[in-house]
Length: 396
Image (cartoon, rainbow, N blue to C red; front, side):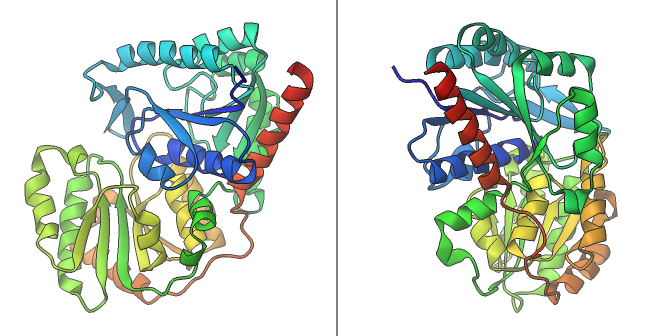
């Protein structure tokens, strides 16, 4: 049997970020190099929605679950009712089986060389000793204070098994701090791809949707629930009701299952508004975003990149996360593009404060910034293809 060319792995548990970046790169590989055998592996239940009509196949693992307590992510029992620790062990075996059976020429792992719970170690050992697989680490533009990345153990694992690092950032926007820090820590200068944008890949699949006229009031993305999410949704319902239908429909992408027992009272208030639609995260979000006057998002890498790619002004909601990645990234973008982005802390989102910022952004006009590299998925795909070509020449 011929070998798999590229296996892409993204861990899951909280938001869509790691999987969204990885899917974008997988879609770009399949678009640019359709003859390659590519497989995406994750536990994220929304993977099919992220892939959409793209020609990327994927395998679903039992999913991690995460809750945020005092700004720190903590593992929880997944929907399969296995504990966080048990899921790590189960996924270790499954990933190893996939790698041993399919013998990928190249593996791209997002964020951590060892995986979220060291679940990549058995596969690394198996592939490293038998199949000469090239392992590539993908890292977001601003890493943040993530202990699993900045540990001596991560360095040891990287040096034993990995061949390269892809940095999904634009140094003209973010500066040299992150790539320099990566180079010092891992002893390898990362290859800068630019921002990886799944929206950019979606536009390649749907060129007719690149420049639609705004017809929606706003798109709102709440992919996961934190400690203060319910009051925010309640305040948002008041704003949507007060603005009325003249500005257009509101499309709110919300995982209602993640909100817990208080969902009926909070979410039903939105459902009763005739100019408000509640949708599942991932499904149709890009189409809504491209037709919106503004957006309300949380400050994740992919959400911010989507706004830049769409040229839509956005209100960014910040959470108290211990790694500080989102705040640092947003500060860089606001300094460079002050008219594109306003921000509020989640605890400050009263109806009055929210309404003031929404009204300001409704009339803003920004457009897609011309001097930001948003072709990171395509650049990463070209880099990965070169590794695959080199592997065939060495180990065919």
